[in-house]
Length: 183
View 1 (spheres, helix red, strand yellow):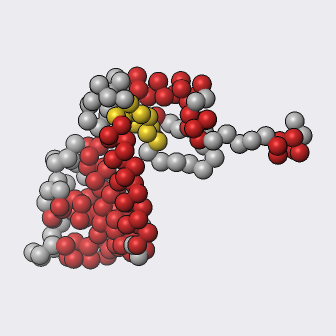
View 2: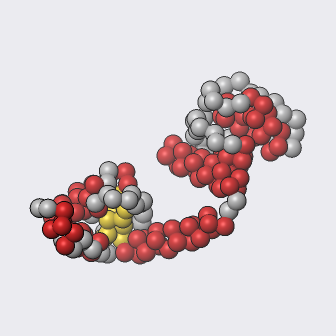
């Protein structure tokens, strides 16, 4: 097909892409993985959707890895999209330093959830800034997974963390004198 012929070919709509046999096969794989139940609420009686957790420019619906797809009932699917709209609107209002802090907070919550908090073990996160580190520490402290004195230990597990940054962070969130506990 020549370039001029290609320019006359109509681009498929997203709805048309979702009717493509490759998407239909991929959709069934994800639903089968979930046991044909919602991965959020375990509903196995309602209509199920396969949710793209994120969208990548130029990617076809069937080209996403398993980790980026979730089987959700219609209610949970609608709630995810509503939350994303709210989240996007809130993020648009954040200054860059608060953006870093929210990213740190979210990364910590995700790590803790994957490890089954409370009682999770220390983990490493590449720190972007002091505010990013504050967000990490806020999540660790607020969810009760770590003693205040262990937060610096957790953040020090990563070699790229500046010791002065961690000391500032530790002093900034701990009302008692800063101390470091041995692992």
